Image 1 (cartoon, rainbow, N blue to C red):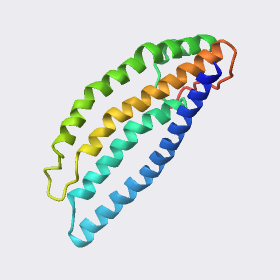
Image 2: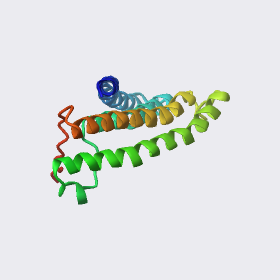
Image 3: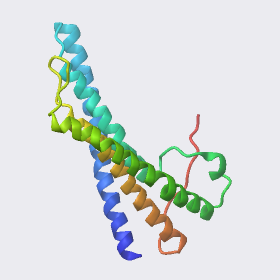
Image 4: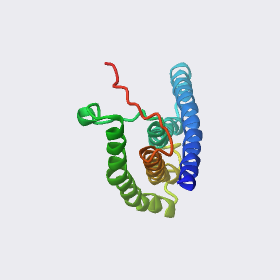
Length: 179
């Protein structure tokens, strides 16, 4: 179990670093958006490249932020059953859901999005907008983001198994969001 827990720790550290970058991207996207709007209204100048850069940063935030959010146990859950289970039952539900639904779905979506990226890469796809950006790097984010989410799923499965066998203690408490 120790080598698996070491693998889980490594995956967690990678996704923590990705989360840090995503946090910076929120700031950068906000700055780019504000500066682009000010330049457009103050000087009457606009560039499609800056607008596309905002979209690219948002895509990075969503696709890579998912694994970071999952690692922090702040993802969306179906609470119908979860809140009525004991802590051990919650660990089992997390384990089954991640192992049989999340990981296979992420791997399938990554597999299906790979040709989308490869086609764009093979033709060196560019935006059709004047001043637009190259497209294939952002299309790589799709399969890569799903792989990172699947890897975080593997990490969570390892931690849940470790908790169920008494090898580790994890804080998997779920707090229902207040609305």
